[in-house]
Length: 325
Length: 310
Image (cartoon, rainbow over all chains, first blue to last red; front, side):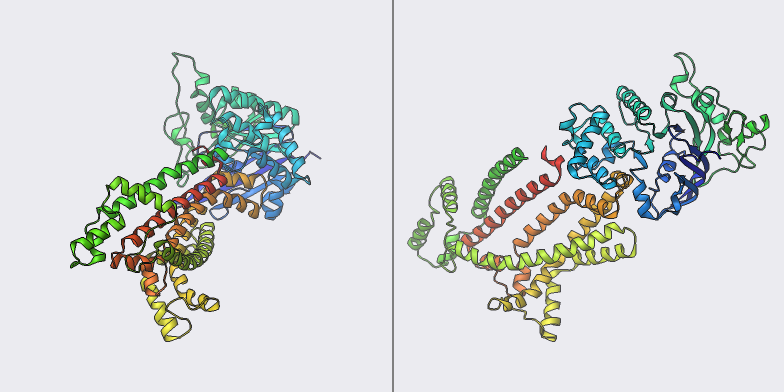
């Protein structure tokens, strides 16, 4: 019997009610995450990465969203659980690092209090023990003079320091899965690398699984075991980092990598993908990328192409790939 | 926090001095001679001159100001032109009467306003929210002297449930007499507090840290506690300002209900051109606002660490 994955997503859809009609932010995606694995969700803004991440914690506002499909975490069907059980899961089994720690930390509580609160929420410890653990965590994420920082408020810290504190908070109950939503995007370039290396080291030390959302191919290359490329709410290609990043098969993935500064040299033309991502309230028929695709052929806009699975495990959603097998 | 406190208290001193200067000059800029008002238009010149000297109006203005300052520091606000009694005593009596109304109205208005606004902000866009918005809008818009008169006609005259005039003779009687003016006075703060609380709660719930709090596993109650902590500086500021207005008393309400408070006294002083009383009331109200602002600022800094730097 094959081992069940830590987290698995089957046919996940997320619809938002907007004044202009229903927007399909996530249009049926499948993926899984094994223990100790780092998966990168890669794509432009608006491709559904962050929404997917929030759906994995059932954090989306219930009144305005409709969610379909199935998310299982450690065998439990997330959307069948009562709210109370989901609360027990959040921060303990699955926790999240947000993009902008200045916005995600409560401005009127000290860092130490915010970390201790999480520990007390999930474990039977007293305040003194929680404070001691909070200090340990700040040291673990390499915050200098950690003891003083326990009593600091978010606005008293630098951006990099705040993100380290946010990571410490997310790790406070040793989660099995860490969801990281563009954790380095709001930081200076030099600090970005430090935080990324920290995350990679912590992942290796704890053996936790990570889903990292990013639009930065460098980040994906630096951290990922596997990569899933998203476009207009669908995963258009997923496979190991080496497969997807080195020899992308989906035209969008190929275009995305060609359009980043990493791929080009000075003097060589930077290839931008023409056009803009589609309106999610009025998606084109067939493949959503077809109108911008340089390898478009007849049939692209007729029906949504099925998932093509290659022998090496890579999955591509494109009729070109379908024809190649 | 302590340095902030000391600095903030020191800031209040020049403001208070400015207030006294302003009150002093205002009365000297006003047209008409206060002495003429006391003595009457037909008084002989030497009587006018005598009075002028008695009140100190014959000295140079800066000297008069310093004298004025020296006297108010000693609690001497002069003597009422109309009654001949010390202004400080009249003021203390009127203010203690107004305090009954103000504290009652503050209690009713703040509890109702916070409850109404809190529920509306938490359920934005629902029927409860719309209802709360309509109620608070009515509260802000309805002229309260009109509402006072309607309540007098319905509850005091027609139904004969409650007294409509004066303060009664203490104890339970005082409470019965206070019901109508307190309710009338509470209408505006209820509306304003409800609107501010609704906006603050609604805005705070939209912020990302609320989602982050849920992401660490906190339930409704715990998240709500964070929200309350975050909106409290804003609410304290609104409550402080409203309390200031209430303590000032209301000329209209105290006149409608014949309640002998500061508003009533102010009204009388204006009609009688009783300058010392007028000066005393304005000075006291202005200094109250300075003090209240100080308290609000200190409370805000205690609640929000980001404000301690400013």
